[in-house]
Image (cartoon, rainbow, N blue to C red):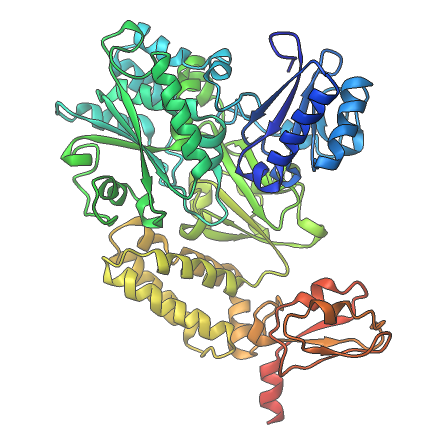
Length: 607
């Protein structure tokens, strides 16, 4: 890393959705104000997601004396001190630093253990400035393709790289392109699937916000390879910043001659437009997405024929997701052999993951395929928040499964994860600690897929509803001895009878939690107890008299006034009023609130 090309010191502010939500816009405005007041000769710019979302807002400072330091948890109040100490006095404020060249921090391994290909420009470019992308070899791959490659050569290179689709299914990207190339038609389409909808997943959003040109360039290369002249980016309208930056990128690419007629003086013409989706999860499925683009209700159809043969407007269509396209320019420039040298035998390259949940370092990471789940969670993610005990990690979103601690050494690759009952998916990784109820988790994901079902298939529409009703009954302490077998039986029918991937994979969270955490289901059903002390209907909050100081903090935070007691006197929680929200438990600083479970069983015995 170095200073800007004009020799000025440079300040870069992380301005992706994560940063803006944490206050980055206010920090950016404050920086601009103080830089002007202090008459500092410094370039202030923005970038996308740097990756360390848990420390947002993030600021990177580059000077001739100190090449690069990234500061986290920035606030408006800290701005002036930062400028004075770092820029004026040349002193690093180490307690604010996340990582930096020439210094050691406790978070240094966050980036050291990654291998960034898709995220190669994360934190390095202004996503609203095409010049930054071009300076980092942007659009050189399409220039190389137009000059040196035939369409068949491009497909061969992608096939040799071994890259598989990063949207979830993991199908060979090169083979997919080949099928579309071989389909005879005077009109073909390239579609980028940006309809990311998994709870806890934000990989594609961050790429579109932080490096939109890499997606455009990947689509250009794919268009050249299959013989298409029109590209469409299908992105949910719930991603306004991604939409905004894609619109800017498309306009800038047109102005520079990278999109349009006879690109760079060649015979190849290609245009890209945006299509905004309404946020239906099922539209992440290829044929449902195509229906939505055509103005129809987003519902899947039978395959074959596959989109490569009959897709958009019944024309051959290639669909890949955002991350897949972002890999393509790198593969063309560096070579298939370089990409294939990373990863495992059947899972080449790297994978971007969104770390979320009960993890210390939530954010965006990119690791070589084959790294173990344990290393991703502990070496890169920093371990479990509040040093609690790890319980499970949910992979693949609603279509995936929960992997227990005993399988943490599983390599992160398509085949190994499938063997656990989970899937790679698009890259969501939700970490859970020992306070998480696995029955409740399966209920959460099944509720999501049940609500997002398009309703076309009876097994998916009705079957998931019946499964959800059973799970709700179990978490309320009304479970029946035969419920587990019912869930497993319904799951099998739904998987076999559903048309698309949504229904076929919807039971996965339930099946994996039954497989690895069956004892929790049995405790809920037979003992009317939630071992994680999480399910509201199965717990009760009570004050521990010996620990209560009468500070009244619990009473102040209780939303329903269920706690009584005078100041400096022992308090009491009225079980008839208490809604089991947990506000008192979280607020108490003296461990004076206890959570009791198995309350229903105790009451039944008393009766």
